[in-house]
Amino acid sequence: MCGITGFTGSESALPFLMQGLSRLEYRGYDSAGVTLISPQGLETLKTKGRLSELEELLKSRTLNQCAGIGHTRWATHGVPSNLNAHPHENEAETISLVHNGIIENYAELKEDLIHAGYHFQSDTDSEVIVQLLDYYYKSEQNMFTALKKTLKMLRGSWALCIVSVYEPDTLYVAKKESPMIIGQYEKGTFCASDAPAVLSYTKDILPLADGDMAVLRPNSLQVYNAAGKKMQPAFIHFPYDVQAAQKGGYDSFMMKEIYEQPKAVRETLRGRFRGMKIYMPEIDELKTDWQNVNRIVLIACGTAYHACIYADTLLKRDARIMSYAQPASEFRYCSPNVDEHTVCIFVSQSGETADTIAAMKLAKAKHCTTIAMTNVLGSSLARQTDTVVYTGAGPEIAVASTKAYTTQLVLLHVLMMKISEKLGYKPKNITRRIRDLKRMPEIIEETLGYRDQMKELAHMLKDQRDAYFIGRQLDYPTALEGALKLKEISYVHADAYYGGELKHGPIALIEKNTVVVALATQPDIAAKTISNIEETIARGANVILVTDQNIPAEKFHHVLRIPDAAPELANITSVVLLQLFAYFAAEEKGCDIDKPRNLAKSVTVE
Ligand code: AGP
Image (tube, rainbow, N blue to C red):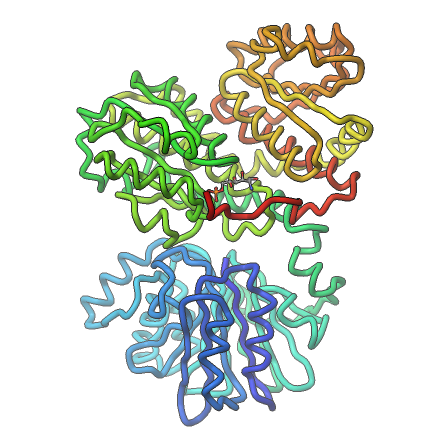
């Protein structure tokens, strides 16, 4: 996700651009830039770092132009740097563009443009668009038709805003899959990625639809639909204030991010399958001697560690190889028995967790192959491993991780299948798993339909100080994650146990009305988990059963049937229910959900 602003009007554009970008920093903040334009030409200033770095850069300049574009970036292609920051200009410096989205076919387009004599400044996919625009403008001599031709060549997602010296008071806008709104107020016409950027000027906005293009001038705006037909603008009155708008109308960033999971999973899996084949060039490019790899170790902290347990359990089903998941803080001090025949996978949403980075350095010193999985392009972890695979969760603002976790699960699922193949094994049930991975956004969407039921069930915790989560095999990391979510944001003490371990001690804790959340999504061991649950019911527990198995419900107080999916994927949807359960428990207790006490979003200290 990135933040875009654009303005053309009768007053200086810069204040609108910068205020808008500051309201959009939750969409991305690793670099920022603006282009101001007048009949005298373009002026582009951009820099790596937060918006405050750009403000510092602008202090020494006098920029009163009445048209311009701005961008705050969440890097997806090309690490955060001055050159990779937006806006991007064509070589002739006559056109400038900002982009939010991913151009899937940018590599082949870039190759064609280089053959046509173009030179590129950046490593981004976005720069391809402005060079292509230049190419078509040369023949069309008309920005609108040049843009139409350019868009026809692109595959992927975009929200674009373009300025040029050919029409210095005009913004050209195009939208497909990434959000873009446009509108007017007394001083001019604007576009922006999201409403928070404009609400201090007007609450009347026009969200563009996929395929729309728009031409914005100081006193006019014109929208054309995907068929090129002129549209009568249908403005909506935006009901929220800036704070609420930044949360997408949700009460918290956490709830917004829970609901962003279908889109985040779709972005993460984008381009990962060619039919039923896995596409993961980051692994193919490794120089690893897979025939002699004898150990796979997954290392992370907190929620990311739970994702590693999931991945390790999955790998054990597909490949006969020694593997384990370990917290980074333990890996560092257990003198791990790893070497050049070991592949170490480091999972970290932020890519900045001190323990995980230290563990990675130790693995490198022992000549292991090191793979990073992170959500932040160019993060410390991403820059130091042999290769990196990126989740597509976008910025995760809430301290409690939700969309970062489910995107880690789906991408680790693909990675584990890829590694199994590299080791000479054919992953079991692969056709159904790939089919259901492709369906995962819709499956999660359907699971979010349980929201009200989870809110109701959360009342069970009102007078409870403890809750227990149980699961076996692939359900165990889900139990761990459900317990962590509850602890983190509602401060209710929660523990997770292997179902089979209850009778070896923990069941002593069960008494009347104790809340037990049981996960039973694995067909081969669901019956075992059910007998564990019955042991707790016999001692007075209040049980919530999460399952997709055909289990008679009459014995249980509450049964939540998740949508049907391959057993290897069922826990990606069941964890969504536990996120909602924890959320509503915290809401009922009046906790600060986005910023829980004692916690930081990224633990950059040991
Ligand atoms: C998750 O809800 C927590 N905020 C925490 O456990 C987090 O997962 C952990 O600190 C690891 O962070 P990372 O993924 O950025 O490395």
